[in-house]
Amino acid sequence: MKQSFYSQIASNKRRTFFLIFFFIVVVIGLGYIFSQLMYWGWPGIILISIFAIIFPIISYYNSDKVALAVSKAKPARKPEHAHLINTVEGLAIAAGIPIPRVYVIEDAAPNAFATGRDPQHSAIAVTTGLLQKMDRYELEGVIAHEMSHIKNYDIRVMTIVVMLVGIVAILSNVFIRSLWFGGGRSRDNRGGGNLGMILMLVGIALAILSPLIAQLIKFAISRKREYLADASGAMLTRHPSGLASALKKIAADHNQLKTATNATAHLFISNPFKKKSFSALFSTHPPIEERVKRLEEM
Amino acid sequence: MIKWSDTNLFKAGAIKLRWWYDMNLTWIIIIIVGIIVLWIVFAFNSLIRLKNHIHNAWAQIDVQLKRRYDLIPNLIETVKGYVKHEKAVITEVTNARKAMLSAKTVGKKAEAENMMAGALKSIFAIAENYPNLKANENFKLLQEELAGTESKIAYARQFYNDSVMGFNIKIETFPTRIIAGMLGFRQKKEFFKTESEVERKPVKVEF
Image (tube, rainbow over all chains, first blue to last red):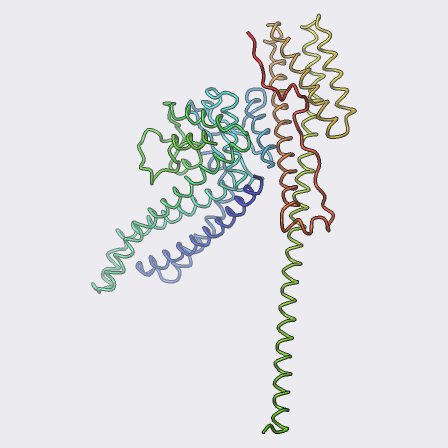
């Protein structure tokens, strides 16, 4: 049982390494193609490469602060949130990791997320709705799920995936936008050469497709992590039905989380945009019915 | 007809072949020994790591027990004012607190711990009869803190058990099994168990 945890962590660390490597290659490749097309030349490639390296480093170290600030999370305090703090501390002991910082979001929609780059710099945030609507076992189930994200280094993998997906999106945006302004010049320079046209079409196709593909990768990774966190969370509490009934309650709730954005949706225990019907391919979370079913079979 | 020079040539070739074979054999042995040494180093380090997990888990139980121990006087102070006629329960808690202090072994600690859990349960049961006490803010917070500490103790035990189990599996399974004994790693420690037979039985609820 413990071994599976450790192999989980090892495989997540490997995955992180390959993801970063893969994306840096992709970003530099995109940078090369775009700057060829836009006649930015070497300075363009170098600038894009620097951007592709510096930007992730900065956001890597600030991801938790950003996520907490965007969600308007406030630190939990002892007399009011004693129960929440105790639950988090208890499950950190069960998982054998340092105690994460605890935050509360003022919102009626029951939801929760974990963030940070590693267990030493992690935080868990829950909404006031969650605290009001869940009983002791359900809250434990939810916190255990988040604790597993921290222990398994999911928070790091997802932080990096989201960040890299963001970079690809930004690059594509910059390229498409600059087509409107610089496009005329480059067309003149090419003099309508066939090769130029083809390259330009490939560039446009890349600019449109690459953010999409990057998103799909993100969603696929995210969904897989959710199932795993459900399973290892159940292993922490030894009580899978707690999380199962919490998920059912969350699904049945009609409030919508106000502070959730596309950039933070993947963090939450349950997809905060429940009203919009997402196709399964474009969802950060597996369907709740499927998660409940798997928990109840444990 | 084999000439002198031919045999000589053949000999030289054989020596060369022999030399080549010896060299390769040496390298193969060096590589195999190297892999074994590396594996022993890794196995040793991972055993040490698991052992430290166990120590850490053990220390964590102590931390939580100490925390509960420190909360008791506060609880008694708060309860005393409201519950004047129930001396027996308060003595029970005080005794359990003393037993916790003197317990040293895993078994004794678990015993004292169960005694304390029982005593606390009866205090909170009695509190049900005193609405004023139940409404006391301080009492409510203490109740939450003690319940929290209680579950932390349970989680710390669970983590301890998991760590012991991980360690034991490691030193009992092949291939670590071969070297664990030689490196001085022995089967670990008792697990925490349900102490009394009463707790093991299904709970009967009567109305």
